[in-house]
Length: 417
Image 1: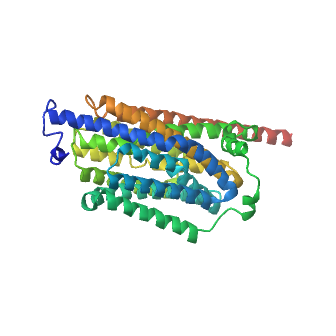
Image 2: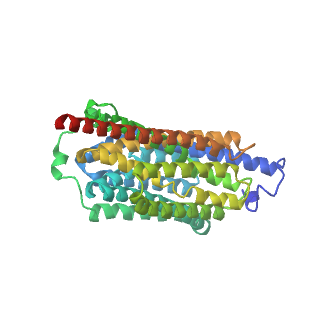
Image 3: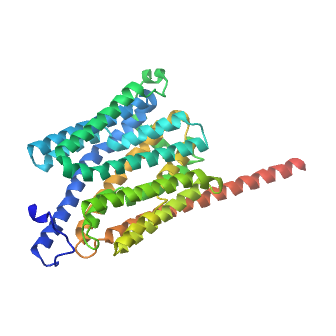
């Protein structure tokens, strides 16, 4: 691999053997990301529903602890594989175990359920959920950004040990400092496997929610297509930026990722705090989806560094979407079923992550040789579908409100006569 130390895809002819080898490495890298995603997400779907729903009985600390423990095991196995210089295929074992504990999606489910437990219905819960979403995204980006500096200076071994240490500290904080929000008597209630599954899906099919089922369905479809378009971005974008047309190095890729998330976090924070006074939550969701859609189109067509950096400005409101939709769904749901709600959402996020990584990496591997940005146009199409669903939600909501007004006015007229 020493031949690639000073290699730049922009400085060699496309017919050069080194360039062809570089393209082959790009394709293989995207395929390894795909394999790890399958090992993580396959068992993760079932773990999300089961563990997340159980948190309504066993408590939020249970789901948070299990998720972080799985991450520690994954890092430990990966560290051993790197130290022993073994085949990369063995790393899938760590991802498989992490998936069986629900991996990152269960952590998200636990965090959002916990925030819903401690925040009252209304604005405070919305702000709490959106801020949690932003905080998690920023933390993930800081980790990715810092790895670009730790790995060259410390090596993979010590970088992964540092990551494991951070996870252990997080686990100790939960076990020693975080109070439980679920009453202890809930843990003594009988747990049924089938009831656990049904609790996570009844929002969309049960007659108990017949008046609001359409809201759950439209919002979940919108969120799902938004995730399909975005969750695979972190695996594809660095590969795209390392190659033509911009040919960045690893530090430039890390700087861009940090800048994009930083701008999105700040813009989404101020939009959540200020814009809610002037527009509804669903209008903010539409703003975020349109912003995200525009960023993908620009990134697909970008030919210069300046155009690529402009992606951060165009997509500055993207972080609003997931948090706002989670908040809308949480406000529809009784307090005793928040865990089941976010368990179902976590399972859906896992499915969407699998689809996003599978399709995104496959499309990138197939199209990188003739248009490396083509995959972002596909993502833009998926975001467009998300926009259609949220616009349908807003339109149906207005129709229902008008019908209620008409019925109320008609009842008043009859009473007066």
